[in-house]
Amino acid sequence: MNRNIITLMCAAAVIAPLTNAATPVPDQVSCAIADRQDFQRPDRVHLTGWIGSRVEANEKNRLVKMDSNRLLISYRKRPGGQEWDGEHVGKWLHAATLAWVNTGDPELRKKLDYTATELVKCQLEDGYLGTYTNDKRWTDWDVWAHKYNLIGLVTYIRYTGNMDVLPACRKVADLLCSTFGDEPGKRDIISAGHHVGMAPGSVLEPMVLLYRLTGEARYLDFAKYMLRAFEHPNGPKIVSRLLELKRVDKVGNGKAYEMLSCINGILEVYRTTGDPKLLEACLNAWKDMVDNRLYITGAASYGEIFHDNFDLPNVNNVGETCVTVTWLQFNAQLLRLTGEARFAEQLEHVVLNQLFGAQKPDGSAWGYYVEMEGTKPYRGSIDGHCCLSSGPRGVALIPTFATSVDADGVVVNLYDPGTAKLTLRDGKPVVLTTETIYPSDGKVIITVDTESELPFTFKARIPAWCRESTVKLNGKPVDAKIGGDGYAAIKRSWAKGDKVEMNFKMEPRMVVGDHKNEGKVAFMYGPLVLAADDELLGSSGFQLNAVSIGNPDLPALAIAPEAAPDAIKSWPNAQVFHLNAVVRGKPQAIRLISFADAGSLGKNYKVWLPLRPLSGGNGLMDGSESRSRQGNVDGSINP
Image (cartoon, rainbow, N blue to C red):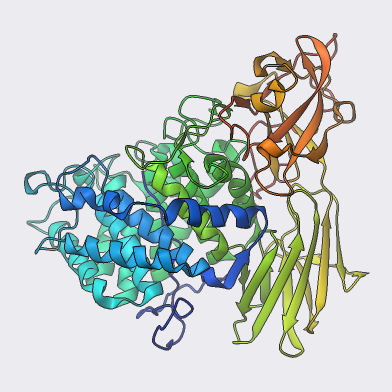
């Protein structure tokens, strides 16, 4: 159980004192490895389409409505609700701070100030900021809770400039440094928590962030101790096994959430120190997950654990949202560090499918396990489930990577209408305004606004699912060459009002099941994974368990988008998808819906549909895909 904070930037220069959310508090220590693609402050990118509606709902219907007193109760009345109840307030502070920067909502800012101030009041004299009584310290989830408190408070400091809570962060870090270590008289942090030490070990990430913010060398020394502890005889061997075996299921006990949390921390150490072996280990983990361990929707693990290659059942506690968000953060970290489009490809896939599939469309609730079939287990409270405060963090991070800047110019990673107010590396401003109804249509128009004629490169991700695309500049076709980083690039001197028009051909794809989905098929349209939903079938008198696919020939299936019925329309341009299926052995047209919206009204849904031809023949003929999982090393869903 854990998550990473892809939130804090290395300061390349001295920044003026913070007066509002637009001028973050700078780091005191520069990074050894400069990011290839910049982390964007959330106030720079405002999205207004389907993605933007989910970001807005996350803030208005979830984060701002959270009861601060509920978040704080286990700190005010130790031990309070256990076991890991203490993690929620730090997660909320992280997500709510990012959301406030994006929206400027004064009500959310008021709640942020209150919650951060009241949390710090709960700190004990020696620096302890957990929810356990003295006799139970460091035996369960309290290092974990300290990790999230640091993440939340450091993010809050960064963007609000409220330095009054920084001493509390230092006291937490100093307590950890004096308690844990491999020097005589100190405790073994691997033994202070769960999952072969990966739960307490994930405090690595905020300790590195706090080191860069404060310049206190002992915090970096602690991070180096954590890397040594991972390799102790009782440790999870994260780096060594990823370098040698290159399989995440061979690390520790395979617990996905905690492991990915540690990996995100390892990437922060890499960014800070430049040790190339750390990046190599993390890239090995990424490749293994993409090649062998991802579900078609971008989910990973079942029973919260990584299992053997292609061991991907459709049910059995599949798709923990905590894992989904740490996977998102992992890709966002690698996107920043490498500037490669393959990581943005994974981000689009997991955001538009598994992440949004776990979020109730109105933003008010989240699902813990969001499986390939069943019902969506939405829950509005945070009682008992780590995922219910993790999901909002993933959504709040989207504006930080949707559009960005690199050394060449601007980079577009996600497609949603809105505005990105960017600053090039030379300090020159560029505004990008996007018009589109993507993913309901493949046409995207981006208008470039500069103060004067300005030379730079415009980069855009051509989706890996797209077989045919065109790019026009000011109405004329242009050859946008794919560079070594995987982006289509246009290098020129840009003037105010220049328009880039991209058209991505939207078409259906059929994914033929293998391994545990042999004899089944699933469908995609553009970037979306589709599902059958009892809500749509019920209006025609059919039930989900009666539906199958009789003719796996794409033209015969006649998959085509239609406007979604009002009852399930989660945004103005939402669609459903006609499909010629078989119901009770007879041909019957049905409608599929995006996995993100499937089950949103509480009915059963299913991604993988059985293949039962009406008559004899090869049930796999003419299938356009050959795998039941999403992705290869390049992030493509094509074989």
